[in-house]
Length: 275
Length: 283
Image 1 (spheres, each protein chain N blue to C red):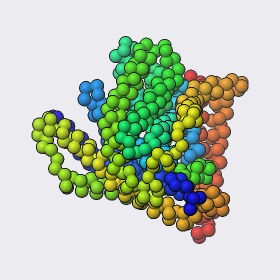
Image 2: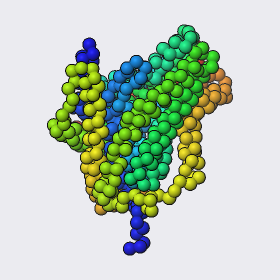
Image 3: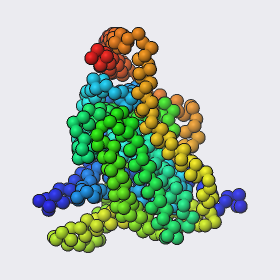
Image 4: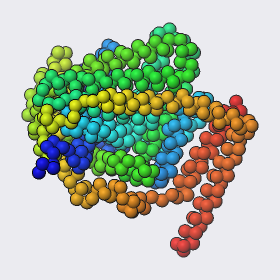
């Protein structure tokens, strides 16, 4: 049993698996309904569903919002790993609290407030999963820029979007080379297993030493290239921004999505006032 | 050449530090987001904490750029790229990470002094964890409006959060922040700076000593972080007040439904028209 557990965990930690999941999530779904929409409109939509549930307290409204964002998450075809993490996150935030409350002598009355809290957290995070997972990061960066977000942020998103696969591969290569040259301790006994785990963690820590040096070189190159192309002037220049953002276009689909969401929300508000 | 001060950092070098920290810490947090943690008894073992990366870089380079880079990296790589962006809560994380890393970076005047590096690393981690704990407690208190009324809830929140703080500080703080930082800082010192075209940090060229401004700035930033959570509480009364001026909230809601239905219909008509037009054009 114990052996199976460690093997299972080590299986999950395999960098290839993680990499595939991340890449699938970041690059895999650019043909969905959500991905085709205008990022500016989706950000407005997100602003509503990311903020309002925190302020609202009645269950029909929250439930309605939750159903809507669950539907949009389905439309965005989010990778399974992300949804799994979402469920784990929800449970660790509130389900755990419920268990401990019961331990400290609470009773069923604790379920009501905690249900509201869970619905709030779930709605807000599903809305964000829809937007940030469903939209392709480049588009997202453009949308943020249109709203006048700091240039640094949209630059960071675009940079991360392009560099992530490269960085992951490099990290994996360094790790593999450490493993090739290393001599892991025997891990048949329990003490050996602990030593083996410590050894693995140590290798990961050590791997950051060459990675830091490599990335330092690379970031210098990046910044120098950016400077050559006048990045810091372009970042504040309006003309450049206009050219960059000219690809954004609002379509009827966007309006339809927005008005349908509005319709649904107002129906839930009506229901909650009637009850 | 006296105009170019020794150790002074120019804008593009700051950008380099920013990009470097962002990429590295972002990558690390991406992994931690994906690796499930496992528990042995009540002690949680998770590879949760890669804070040693920005700590190391903040001690070697410009602390503010490194701190902002770390917070942005976490936001962009592990939240936005994975679609885990959590709204208001992220602001709090962003600010606490920035403060923790920045303070640790400013504490070190000479990266070769191991004792100084160790103390700074623990301070930065502890500060970040402590602020996280305070905000977490406040968050539950504010989100659950009748917090005190629910039997057993206050004690359980204090107990779990307090325990998580101690556990994180002892386990992640020492194993994943102190030891790697102590290993990396002296090794990287003098090697990584030339790659970015900078002078290594020494006592003479280090950023000016800590003044009263630092704690004040940190307090303000922390207040903003707490304020983001406090907003939730005041927002509830805001909505109540809005409903107050309407004659009856049911009528208002019915009006909203009608307006929304009209909007949907209008968009549908517009859509049909454009489709017709484009269809005619293509013919």
